Each structure stands twice: as C-alpha cells, then as structure tokens.
Image (cartoon, rainbow, N blue to C red; front, top):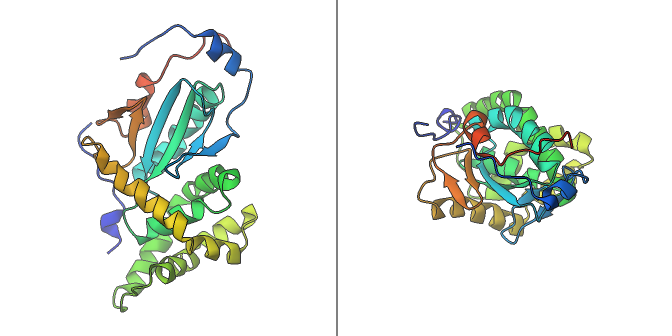
Length: 236
C-alpha cells in the first residue's frame, strides 16, 4: 500500500554570471542560515527575507528524491548562497499520503524557531522511518480505515517513531500531538499542496521555482546548481 508513495513523480530530466552588486557584498557579512520567517501562505522561508534571489522547493517527506536533495544539495545551498544572503529558500509542502502529512505537521511544530531543525531531523532519519512506515502500512492493510484524520496521523506519528525522533529537540510528545491537531496548520499545509498545480510545469517532488520561473525538468542538485546566481569571487 505504501510502496506506491515511496517513489516521487519525476518526469525525464545556462550558467549566468552576473556581477556581484554592492548590496550582495554587504549582505555577506551576516550569516542568514539561522533566519527563518513565515510567508503569507504559511510556508517557512530560510534566509534573508530580502535576498535578491528566491528559490521555492515543493517537497514531500515520503519522497526519496527529496531526501537525496536534502542530503546533497541543501548543505551547499546553505553554506554558499543562503549564508551570504544571496538567496532565500521557501519550503512548500506537497502532501502525497497520510505519512507525509504527519511529518509535514510535525515539521511545523514550534514555529519558525524550530522549523529548520525539525525539517533536517525528519529527513536525516528517512531510511529508518520509511522502513517503519512500510511495517505500519503492512500491519494496517486489513484494518478498518478511520475517518478521523487527526487520529490517523497521530497514530502514524507515534507508531512510526516520528514523535520519538523529534522529542530530543525539546518537543514533548504532548506538544507534538497538539501540533498534529492544529487545524490552521493543516489548512496551510493542504493549501501549499494545492498551490503546486498553479504551475502547469509541476511534475513531482522536489520541484523548484527560481525567481518566479518554474524549473520543470530540474529535480536534483546536479540540475539546479548551474542555474543558481554566481557566487562572489572573494572568500566572504
């Protein structure tokens, strides 16, 4: 049942070198990797809110390609572009299944101050969590489905180890269960999911939009890297 969710929807797969503006050079003096804000759509944004470049990533927490990008590309984005204030990264959920929804709700637990750490923690345990999710799905295949979504995702979060995984981050299990039942957060997550189809080019996760331009055929770091703005020639 779950296996059909574990592969992302991916269709078959210019290096610009603009001069670095003085404003970009001044921004490099600030480390923006600890700055997280929340957009009007409810999405979390990592980095300088006034960065000259804006990258949007549609992601799913049950997507192996998203996990791979988080491991390979995200650290370089943070260290090189986001840290300098050259680029901000907006995370938009594209929920594909109840397991993904449970993780998306928990990633938001604690607000902007905790989001980045929650997000990284969830993806860091991807392989182990997917094994637990598969075991959960196998155990539930003959069970009567519940119509209570909060009950469903709370049971998933508990029995697949998500709650235990985030507890060391200072999120008590009771607090996490409250986050899973947060109707406003649920509305925002589902709204972000629906917004994916505003772009006719959307072809599965991860899906990127750079400075308002959908990158239809880019689903990994190798494809994204050449399209990013040039880095300063200095070591700043």
